Amino acid sequence: MKVLGIETSCDETGIAIYDTEQGLLADQLYSQVAVHAEYGGVVPELASRDHIRKTTPLIKKALAEAGLKLSELNGIAYTSGPGLIGALMVGASIGRSLAWGLKIPAVAVHHMEGHLLAPMLEEKPPQLPFIALLVSGGHTMLVDVKAIGDYTIMGESLDDAVGEAFDKTAKMLGLGYPGGPALAAIAEQGEQGVYDFPRPMVRHQGLDFSYSGLKTFALTTWNKSNKTEQDKANIAYAFQEAVVDTLFIKCRRALQQINETRLVIAGGVSANKRLREKLEELDAEIFFPRMEFCTDNGAMIAYAGAIRLQAKESESKRILVQPRWSLEELRSVV
Ligand code: KG4
Ligand code: ZN
Image (cartoon, rainbow, N blue to C red; front, side):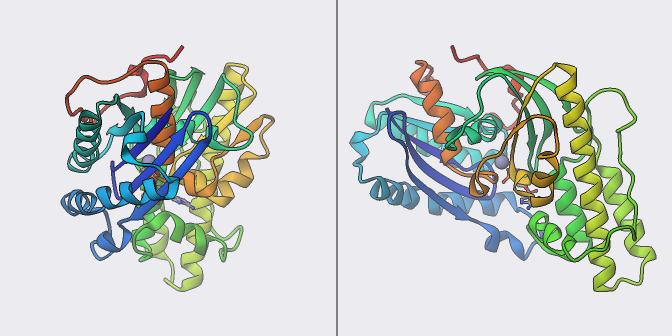
């Protein structure tokens, strides 16, 4: 079964084709970074308009890459949520209409399920069950994954998502947008032991997170410093260490709590080198997506959709967008 995946939930247009027999046949990505950079963050209306410009040409490119004709597709998967409503509408309208025109099924994919299943595209995919740490610009959560679609949220952020905290702290330090990778890059020049940031929520029972305090702590520290480039690097370093440590502690706790030995880490922040290195210290089998599938992409949507279409799941002939949608509402795939 050849499935076209369409991802337009935020600031990346991702189009891919996944074949349940041959694997990934095409993967195309267009990033809107240049469009939003001058505003210091994602401007939703500009995002929607850019998806309109890029989605159809990228579908054509993906078909050419796979050497396929439109008529050879067997299904379409589009990101239905969570995300920016206008941006989601673009992918959902194009995806649903294309499926209608081609008389093939379409399935509405949950963006975070896409992230969660991204490591399944690797050579050594995780076996189920496992725990997933999902860390992106909009979400931070630990999920007990019993089966595909059978998700229980064990803990989540009570305020900012990890990626959001990275982005806001980076912006405050004048590092521009997107901030996460920029902050991680200058943290490499930071010195250990200059600043010690708090580890929020680690003394609390349970598996929830909180990151808005760390961002404020970074701001106060920056304002009290001499504001040199080295101060900036030292703050980035201390901030990143605090984030990575809290994630490490909560992952360890989650694994112990349900006696699990497999951990999947996915979502944009799973591209963070320091986080990847630190989580390898856990007494568990660790699975990450390859770097380009940590951040938003079409491949993860094509894959998640293919699994659901194969299980005979598909949507009625309506354009379905769900800007707010919990992973726990998904149906289990048997
Ligand atoms: O999954 P994603 O591409 O989009 C959402 O679903 O939100 O995640 C984007 C987030 C941004 O906040 C970005 O700054 C962060 O992931 N990110 C990073 C790194 N690469 C991306 N954060 C820290 N270190 C990185 N290397
Ligand atoms: Zn994402």
